[in-house]
Length: 138
Image (cartoon, rainbow, N blue to C red; front, side):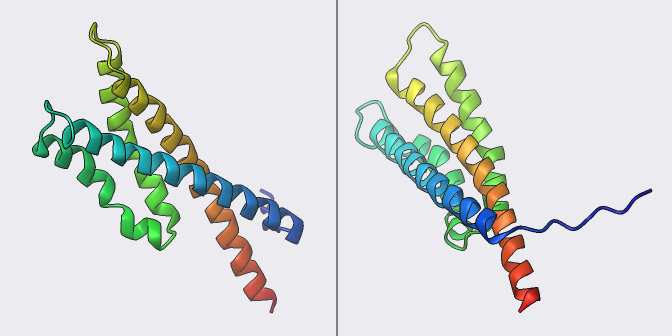
């Protein structure tokens, strides 16, 4: 069996990774915030809304805020798992006879959050690997 060669990330590749990472983080946080605002609009500002439903919808997403602030790639990976529940729930609601625009918005936002979180997690791992690589050289 041949040994794997270690991954070497060049400075140019690192710049590209960092640019992609920062851009995708912007997309993620815009979608994440929009989903939380949508839950507030649906449950706290609407006559048919309820505080209990808002808590059920929002608390699982709010739990990740400390990990997001510390920029942990595992937090983004876990968000991918959690957001699938929102996606499933909203797709079922979108296919019902009484389609509401809010359900379609949740589908779009949950897909955007899933894809961006997945890519952020991967690029963040490469970026951290590059930083460790640079620290070892110095």
